[in-house]
Structure formats: C-alpha cells, structure tokens
Figure 1 (cartoon, one colour):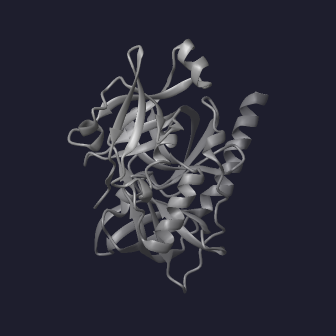
Figure 2 (cartoon, rainbow, N blue to C red):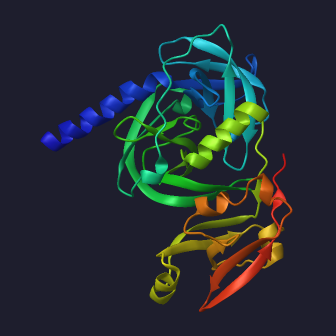
Figure 3 (tube, rainbow, N blue to C red):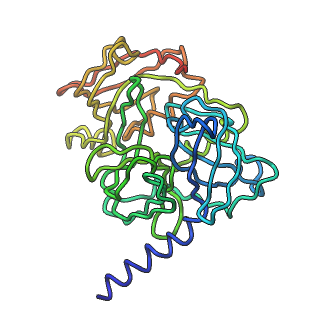
Length: 311
C-alpha cells in the first residue's frame, strides 16, 4: 500500500505542476478548424521572462493561427512562428494581450532510463487536462512518417496516448518536461520527441527564423549492441542499426542497407539516432558526409550527400 501511495503522490504532483501549462489547441479558422491537439507553455528561447507554446508540426499542418484553451478555461489566440517536420516540432506565439500559465521547466531526456516513470498530460479526444502514467519503454527510436520522412531519436512509452495527445507534455517524476508527445504507434505504444540540447536549438531556430534548415538522409534505425570485439576496438557498446532505408532517399543512393550498423558519421561516433541527427543541420546539406557502417563482419565506408528537407 505504501508503494501505491508513493506512486500516486508522484503522479498527482506531476499533474498539478505540468497540467496548467498544457493547452487544448485548435488550428485554422475557428469556424472551420483544420486540426487539433495539445500544446505546452515553455520559456521563450530568446527571452526567459516571456513564453511561447510548443506543439507538433503535424498538429499545425500548414495552419498559421489558432486558439489555445488552458485547463482553467482561459484561452489565447496563437500564431505559428515556425514548424520543423523532421523533429515534428512547432513553435507558437501567444497574442500580446493574452495571459498564459506559468511555463513548464524543461528537463533533459538524455538522462532518461528504460523503466523510468513518466507522466503524459494532454487533451485526448478533447478531454482537457487528461493525465496518464507509465514507463519509458525504449530510447533512441526512429519514427517514419506518412510522407516518407523520419522523426529521429523519439522516446517510447507505454503511458496511454490517444488522438489529441499530440503536442502535449511527457514529464518525469520531478515534473520536468522531457518530451513532447508526438504519435500513437499502436496499442500500449506511444512516442514523444525528446527534450535535448538539439531540441532546444531547434526551438530557438523556429522562434527566430521560422524554420530549421536540416539535412535529410532517410534511414530508420534504433540503437543496437556491437559485437564484443568491435565494441572494444571502438570503445563504445552500441551503434545505430538501420531498420529501413527510405526509397529514393540520399541514404539509398549512397548504398546504405537495412541491417547496416552505423558507427560513425562525419568521423564522429554514432551510438544512437541523436548522434546522427546532430550531423544533419544546415552545414551538412549538399556536402559529402562520410558514414562508416558495420556490414556483416566488415567495416564499410559510405559517402552520402544529405539533401535539404523541404516542405
């Protein structure tokens, strides 16, 4: 009973801390909305005394404005400052006359461990302020999207997510937001964009420039253990196993194959999707990117030329 009480107190505390800053979001014309989901109030990357809203790029879906309604019933008109399909993140500005709740505190998903308690807060099926709890089921996942793109390094959780949760908050036991819920992959399987140094840079670029120039390779992968001899030689236990190569992508043109394990990109170690993602910002576009993979028992060097993600 004591363990259950402790668990309950933790979830309640997180819900009370994070819940007020999670809004139900409707985008497009209020009379003819184009989409809906959730959004989270976070500190403005350029001015910590101000706030912006973060949601998913697929939630805004090309819309430029919308309305956010908070748990206390207040609402605010919002304007889309920018969206990045590769990270599935978007940043919204709140109308200057509107008041928003206290922003959440962003954590670091890099510290997450499989089995750790997480709490999801969002607005599934329009049910405002809904809270579910679960554990981190996996880390470093890649999520292929319907348009052939890949959202890298997502967090897998069994906290129940349903339509409308997209754009909501995934928090740890301390109430720090470590992810932005992005998709429902199946029964008992939810995914969230992690909050990392890379994510913070993406939000800052969207806030300032309205876009993020990103390179695109087109691989779907997850961390995988390296053979003992290779791990000892490289000094690290894992690489990024390629589960799928997107048809027509730079990765396919370069000769990357399903089953390859990427161990280096641009002469830097790759142990998870985030390591590859860091190599694919604006400076990588159109430049030859050397990629080293373990293919069977052999190390193979592949030369890829990332394309610019458009649209």
